[in-house]
Length: 374
Image 1 (cartoon, rainbow, N blue to C red):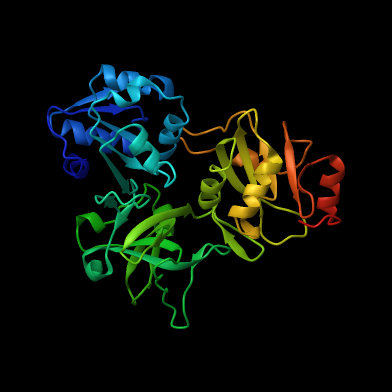
Image 2 (image 1 turned 180 degrees about the vertical axis):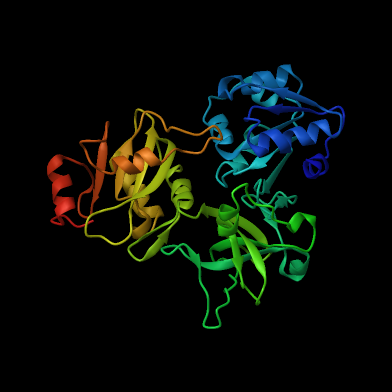
C-alpha cells in the first residue's frame, strides 16, 4: 500500500474512483493505499458501469482512478460523451492496459498520465512504468540489473517448464525473446516469498538451481519480453499460450490483432484439440457489430497474422463471460470446442481454399475423422 501511496504522488486532496472488487489487490490494496495512507478519499462504486463511469467521476470531483485492462476497453467502446473530457483526472493507474488501447485512452479522455504496474499478491516481482512508455509494464535496464531481482528465462510452452542447458542451469532471454518472468528470492523485504497457505502449492512456484547451485527463484507464470532499453512487455499467461504447427501462439497477441479487425468489439482466444493433430488449433470467440463480415475478417487475419496464428475456428458470441476482475472465462468455450451440436450461434472453419465457411455436421465429421485437414 505504501508503494502506491508514493508512486501515484497522492495527496490529501485526491479523490480516487474505485470500481474494482476490493477482494482483488488492485482495488483493495493499490487503490485504497494510495488514498488512505495520504489522507485522501475513496469514491467506491459497487459494480463497474461504463455508462456511469465518466458522469460519476465528474460529479464526485475525482482526480484519479484505478483500472484493470479490460475496464479501459469497455470505456473506449462507449459512444463519446461530454463528461469524458470534463473531469479533473490527473492520473489513471492499474495493470493490463493493452498497447492498442493505451494511446486511445490518453488522447480521447484527456488523461495527463497513465501509470501501469505489474505485480501479484503472493509474488516477489513488481514493476512500475514511470516513464509512460506505451505498452510497457516497467523497466529494468541491463546496466542496473544487479539492483533488480527480475529475470526472463527461456521457456518450453509444451512442457510448461524453463529450458535448461547441458549444465542443468536455465538460459536467460535476450531482447525480443519471450520467456517466463522469475524473481530471485531473498536479499531484501521486497524479494521475499511467503507463498500460499498451502505449503505444497507454494513450493511448486519455486525454481531452484536456476543460474547457480542453491539459488531459488519465484516463477510468476507470466510470459514477457524486453526491448534493448530494458522495458518489459507482458505477452501471456503460461497455459494461455499454446503450440500449433510447431509454433507458440500467444492468445494475448492474437487477441490484440483481432480487436483491430473491422466490426470486432470483444475477443476471447483459446486453443482446442483436433483429433489427429499435434498441439491445439486456435479458436476465437468474437462479439461483433451487426455489419460484421466474416470474409473481410478472414482477409484481415490473413494479412496481419502468420498462418500458424490465424484462428482455425471462429464463433460469434452475444457476450463474453468474464470474472469479477474482467478476465474472460474460457473453460466453457474450450469444452464446447468446434462441435456445432454444442455451439449456439454462428460457427466458422477456416478452409485453406475458401476462407471462413460455416461449420456443418458434415464438416465437423470430416475434421474429426481427418478427411478434412486443418
